Amino acid sequence: MHEWLLCRAMRALYPRTAHFPGVADCGDAEFVARFHREAAPLLWLGVVAGTWIYTLAPLFTVFVPLPSFWLPAGLADRHAQRIATVPLYFVRQPVFLVKMVAGLCWGADAKVREAIGLPPLGDDPDDYRRGDDEAPRKLAVVP
Image (cartoon, rainbow, N blue to C red; front, side, top):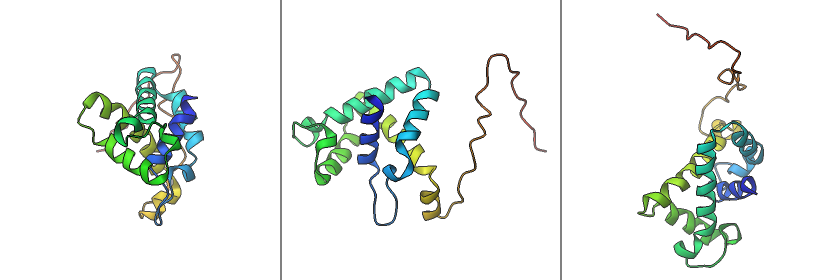
């Protein structure tokens, strides 16, 4: 449920445009599932809180008693703008975590990187993930 809601919020925050793909075109569901598995529990809690705030806040941002995923495109865009600039830090910051996750997904996509003139990212080496029985890796020092 939380992953589904997070994907809907991310899609509203990073929609498709004439020049760029939206986060929905970037494998958002797979990214969110992996993020959920790999994120620290406290970070995931913040993202879930931000997702629920974003989903339920249209009543206060655009004065429509609907969840954000049922808003028409124009109202969804206005809601995204208003929730991101609300002067209440405890509301704005959890929503920022949702935008951060969406940005990580969107910015890593090869089509997005090509559109802004960057090479695609290589495969994730997964080298920061290690079990307790593995010795820490030594950093290479470049002279």
